[in-house]
Length: 177
Image 1 (cartoon, rainbow, N blue to C red):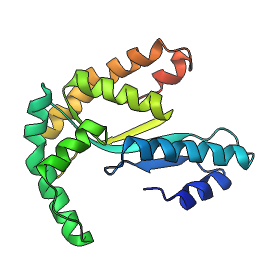
Image 2: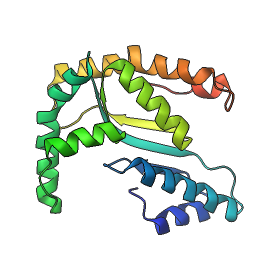
Image 3: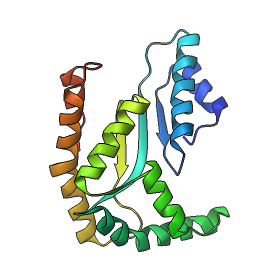
């Protein structure tokens, strides 16, 4: 859900978990949405809800290499979707800003792991779904990105989270690539 306040509170009222789609939302909007959801669940007397985030991602050896490699495919995908939905064309500046703000997970394994860890901790996420098929990526790019997610990003995220006292190591080990 993109998450209007009404729909977020409705989900909380009925005891549902929340899965946000990070489609360019700012960190402040994501934070406000997750906080509203948890407060709503408390107000309605519901058990602690689980919160997830779905986002686009692409991993390459370097930050700039990832940005340069995925930009043409991202632009093509959002241009097509934008025409269908009446959006303005995607600009390189908007693409870069979405990466810098955390809306898109694009970069090196180290950068992606740090960004993902920050998102999990800041938003109190229980689940993260990453769409690694950003636009019409060639198969070899998808495979390479997915390999880097599984081999380098997720182990780093689990390691960074394992030392935290706010959850048990067991809970963080449930993060799966």
